[in-house]
Length: 99
Image 1 (spheres, rainbow, N blue to C red):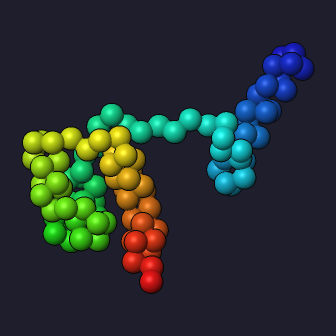
Image 2 (cartoon, rainbow, N blue to C red; image 1 turned 90 degrees about the vertical axis):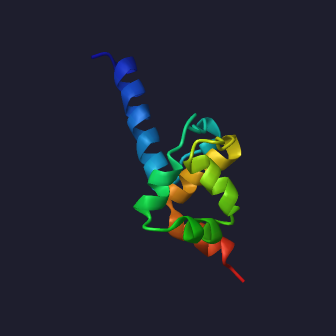
Image 3 (cartoon, helix red, strand yellow; image 1 turned 180 degrees about the vertical axis):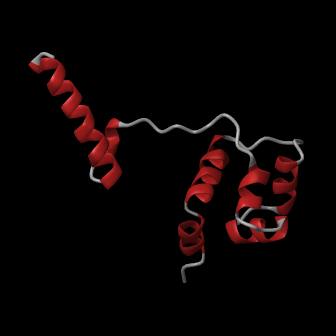
């Protein structure tokens, strides 16, 4: 292996370590918002009813029902928000319920 190849691999590994530790320069990374989100699966994984999920995360119950029943699709911002809920529900609740 050449030194140049090794340097690239080492830089990539260091970037991954920095990212996992939260010390990476996030301006260098792209945000990925999936084109589809299974809202019902997120809600069920959290063990919440539709009413609980909607009220906990500030969503209109009718919108949630429309998403789950396929009558409407979350827009990009809503999909990003739902992904944050899926990964860090407690943090979202803390932020929304802070006095």
